Length: 400
Ligand code: PLP
Image (cartoon, rainbow, N blue to C red):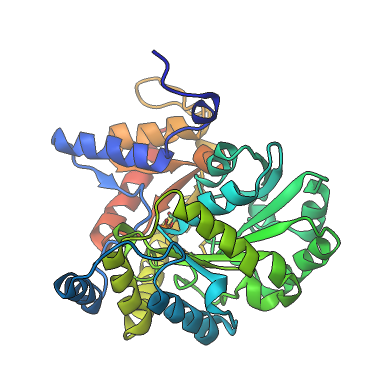
C-alpha cells in the first residue's frame, strides 16, 4: 500500500533529526558518541519562564486561544520589535505560531501558487527547500560560497529573478554558516527588489541574539522600510531563550498577509498552546540578561572551536559571525582513503566515517545545499567541543 502522495514523496524527513537519531542509537548501544548534529542550546531557559508556565496552569482557564496568538504576547512582541529593532508594528501585524518553522508553512501555504519560485541562497537551513516544495513552490537554490561570504549579492539576486519569483528567503545570522548581512548588503538587495514588486521577502531572524564576533546584527525590516509591505520578519524564542521544545515562533508583516496566515492557523492548529505562550511572554518581558549571557557563552565556545579548526590544514574554515555552528569545508578530504581502504566519495561519506569510526556526529553539507562541507553545532559543553576537535583531528590524520 502506498501511503504517500506526490507532494509527500517529493520531500525527505529533516536530515539533522535523522542523524541525531542515529547518534542516539549508537549511544544506546554503548558507544562513546559526541553528538553535535542538532541546533539547540544545551542549557535551560531562565527560571521565570518555567515559573510563568506553572502559574498559567495553576490559574486555569486554558481554552482555545486566538489564531493570531494571545494579545498579551503579541503586545510583548510589538514591544520587542520597537525596543530591539526600532520597528513599530500594530497588534494586527503580528502573528504567533508553533515555532518559526510553522510560520514558514503558513506563509507559503497562504501565498504560493503552483510553480511559483522561491529564491533560497545556499548554504541554507535544511528545511527551507522542502517546505517550499510541500506547498507547490519551486525552490531556486543560489549557491553563495565562502568567496561570497556565504551571502547573496545584488548581482546574483538580479540574475536569479524570473517572472515566477514570489519570495526571497534571507537568514541572518545564518544556519549553517553563521554569516550576518550588513546594512549596506541589505540596501543593495533592496535596490533590486524595488524593481520587482511581485517578490516578498522572508527574513528569518531566529539567531538574532547569537552573536559571536564584531559583526552587529541588523534586521532587514529596519534597514529596508521601503519594502515594509512585502517583508515578513520571522523570529521566535527557541534559540534566544533556549526554548526549542516550547514551540513558540512569531512574525511581523503586512496586515493582510498576517490575516491570511492567521486564517491558515485557524484551520490547522487553531492556536498555539496557551501555557507555552505564557512562558514566551515571561521570556520576552522578563529580565533579558540571559540572552546576552548565552550569546557570550556561545562566543567563547566558538572561539575555542575556531582556534582548533583553523590549525587543521586540510579543513577550510572561516569563524562564524553568529548562530551556533561551525561550518567546515572538507573538500580536501574527499577522494582520500581510510585505513581499511574505503574511499571517501563525498561529504556524506566523511560524516559517516566520522560518526562510525570516531564517534562524532555532524551533519553533511549536502543537507544545506552545500556538498563538501560538514556542520558541527557548538551548542555543547567545552569538554564535548574539545573532544569533538580531537576526534576531527584524528579522523583527518587517519586518511591517506
Ligand atoms: N530557522 C532556522 C534558520 C533554524 O535553524 C531553525 C531551527 O533550527 C528554525 C528556523 C526553526 O525554529 P523554531 O524552533 O522556532 O521552529
